[in-house]
Image (cartoon, rainbow, N blue to C red; front, side):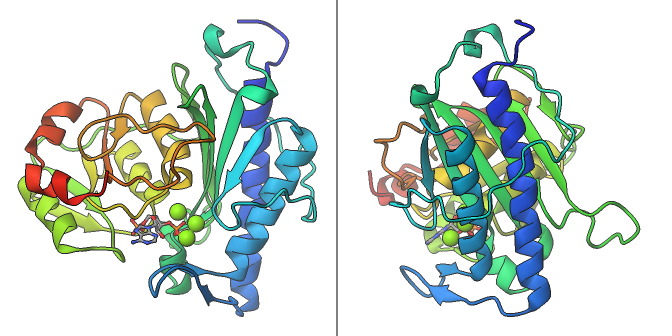
Length: 308
Ligand SMILES: Nc1ncnc2c1ncn2[C@@H]1O[C@H](COP(=O)(O)O)[C@@H](OP(=O)(O)O)[C@H]1O
Ligand SMILES: [Mg+2]
Ligand SMILES: [Mg+2]
Ligand SMILES: [Mg+2]
């Protein structure tokens, strides 16, 4: 490990600060009370002022400090945004990041950053605020290698405790910002969508015989449940999520010893040219779970139903 800060270390550390600032924007929009909701592709696909403003801030700030990286954000795929508020990346105390030697010499042109400025928009509009996360995922050579998950409303049901927290991790390094916990050994808990269910989604869940199903919003929030030991797996047999939903959660989960793939157990590609849509669904497991054995339990007709 070199003593000088590598690009990846600077990028993860800056992304923590930028995600914190995006979380403040999300809370400010909610406080003002006018969410400015617009419908995107369909009735259950919403965008708010918070999604727009948080993305503008994240993309403008990353562009300013890392001008040669590729950034792909949920809210306007063509945006080369420079118009948003630039976050002062020296405003927060830098976090400790472990970067394995093989990631010490990455250059900006190799980096693709997948940005979901507000994951769990449906739940945000319905006041289920602890389902909301800000996701900044970092990919190199088509692989999710690092990520930041910010929970702006962590602890909002426990007033008196510090509101919000940020988790970060590099694959092959360690996870910071939280303590990783193991799920219970005497029962099997599955997390899945709350607002985008379908018969195929439910068939996949039944096939893994859960004792309990947690129907909650957001890919970031569901992966947080795996990291906190509150669920064993995240099962979503639907083509609904996109690469910005899974890149950051996948990298952090893998850094913690877990796995995230499509529903068949195959790896998700994160190059700039990769399809945005995770057309074969999402399957994620906490550390210590047999990921491929779980993928094998998903019925073939469920897998065949998903568009390749
Ligand atoms: N059918 C669908 N259409 C559009 N987006 C979908 C979708 N199914 C899942 N998603 C997106 O995937 C993320 C996780 O979904 P869910 O909460 O249902 O598990 C959410 O991200 P956003 O909130 O960032 O849009 C959600 O909008
Ligand atoms: Mg969305
Ligand atoms: Mg999302
Ligand atoms: Mg989003």
